[in-house]
Length: 287
Image 1 (tube, rainbow, N blue to C red):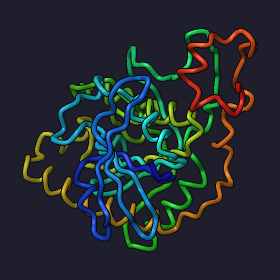
Image 2 (cartoon, one colour):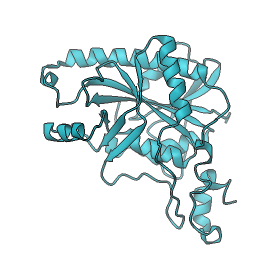
Image 3 (cartoon, rainbow, N blue to C red):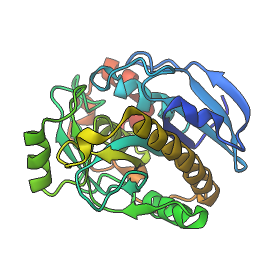
Image 4 (tube, one colour):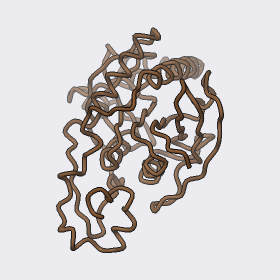
């Protein structure tokens, strides 16, 4: 299969974005099972890109049920070096209004028991995750927003909760007291696994509404939510298309060498089965 260096994770509506041509569907197998859906590939702004519907087409998979390892591994397998992750979020601050787009720089984990690493089974790896978002990729998204007139904000913290139920008012107010900016259910595991796979990663967080802390929360109607979702989808498409146009081949960040000093296990002690299973990820360091 032709190498595809740009991956996009989000809703299946992204496949319909203007300018996407040569669309093909590809099934990718991984040592970690089946991804959320087949990958959809096509040409966008003169570059080949791959799309993955995070929750499967038709939105069939709960956040807690997502096979994050298979999703990120599938991207790695086809050659992806950068992932743009579009995701709906709730706002925990008045300043982040519905229809705003936030590029968070930090994550805070409130999930329980999710698998967030490719490693184990005789191979101990501890990647640096102090700065979980690729700075260069964030810069390109911000520049793209200015170019297409979409309100993009850089910075802040994405709190990743377990779900599938939304927060209680008490929980929402605690998260606000911690200084969290936005809340969602999916991106923390994607970011960790992308770092382990040496893939640049950035979240395009689409604010749909204020979380339940806000006095107006209970007055929001289904029609209003749908209208925001539709506008967010349109904005996300414009933003992603322009970001893809702005990306060049060079990677000036350190994401591509995240494992260089992260492998603690004596190379001679790594089980053969583990080396074979993780060959795609570790072959630069453990031949």
